[in-house]
Length: 414
Ligand code: OVM
Image (tube, rainbow, N blue to C red; front, side, top):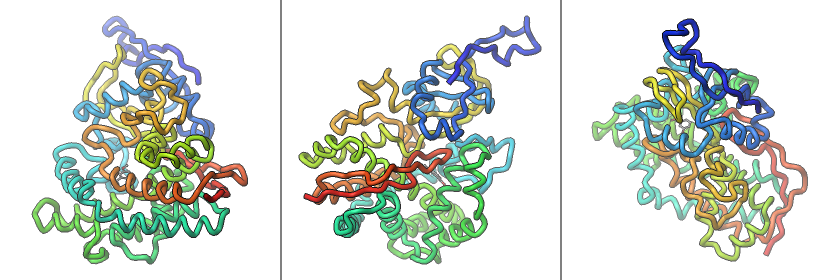
């Protein structure tokens, strides 16, 4: 976690014309196995190094404090998304897939696509899903309670979103095993072309083909969220191709995020049993517990932005066209913003965490994520007295997501 003051490149070769500038520097590799396995000490070192830190290893900037992460996310004019929200700069190298027209876009394109998804995913618009989501959660938890022992990842955190979300979008049952491999590709692709990326891309061809085949009007159920995007074509808001690309965004962003989030929620309730007790005693805490899980163990750890002009951050000058790595998960534990940041507390005011981002790109699907998590925690709270680990959980490393590969659980029932 070394962080030192280094001389800025702005001065190199033109000393005497331009002042040699000083900036905090770190040699950390945020995409190494060591960092991804236990990011929190590294986050602390980066926060302490300064408001913005130069990561020598990649030649990029990093922001790890809450204030700077939030400020960057709310200034899309200076910190753009259209050069990609991963390490790769779309202006310098071709993206691995056609860019997302919502995530990897700026206004005015983003404004138009975002308006469509905002309308479709509004809490009021998706409340029709609640009954189904709750019924599926009760049925799944009923089966797991019978079983008593199960894998919290495969049998719950994966099984539930893989059922309810594709059903809600309106895609066929056939081939759904492609959804997790695709998510792994998408979220690993925001990092460097390291071992995690290469592994995820091993079966890229057929997985991508299946995904794209599910994005057309013809492949979608008439009453699902996917077809609602195509209704915006009929209203003149999108082209037919754009609608397909937004269905792709559903299938890219809608599964792994909630899989990792549910896994992390289960882990938190197992690791901090008194918090599970508090929640069981007072189920009105479930809503806030969801936010606290996202703050404390952010399933989505980082995204990048790219500067569109020279800008100064806390006295440190950044150039134009530079990549900036935003540590959402570190902002979530910044002691400048949170009291007892490393304590998991379901009754704290956890709103203001950065796991959904903020500003114009703030998570458009968060009401769906909330619906899924509340349905699962609600069903568990009725039946489960406590969770016990029957073996050590193992982590699934990913360049962007934080979560588990296995979570071997035994439950004690009420
Ligand atoms: C997209 C997309 C992909 C991954 C994540 C995401 C968190 C969006 O394809 O639009 O948002």
